[in-house]
Image (tube, rainbow, N blue to C red):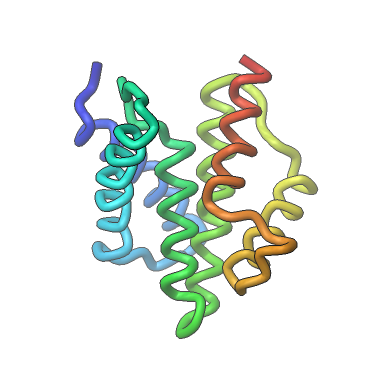
Amino acid sequence: MKNYAEELYGIIKLYSYIGEKINANLTKEDLLEFVDIVNHYKEHAKKHSLTVIAIEPYKVISWGSVSLCLKYQKNDIKKAKYFLVLAILSLNVFLKEDVGKNHSSDFLKKVYKMLMLECQGDKNFGIGRNGLYMIFKSASLIYH
């Protein structure tokens, strides 16, 4: 089994690569958000009595990207939107790698709209970090 640092590096490497492709201008500080997410992930596992054997890209990317969107939403909406696009694209790549299938572009556009609503504070019609996670995690389990 890889250690957490190696797993996180692999996730960040793909995320950064896709970020470069869409000109997201990720900073080192942005990417450090994912270290904080992994630390939160460990605490989450303890709270729910889960045994963590690996870092799950679906959870790390979902939680990290939505956190970054919320962070930038008020002062740099363009960058906030990039994090949502980046999350969806990255998660779809991981889904394709995991099960050989991914979500359609029409479905992903709906997911993006719901994520934007959440980041803008419209929780009645949005989905948050856990909703995004469950969309991709459940698909990976269904198609597996």
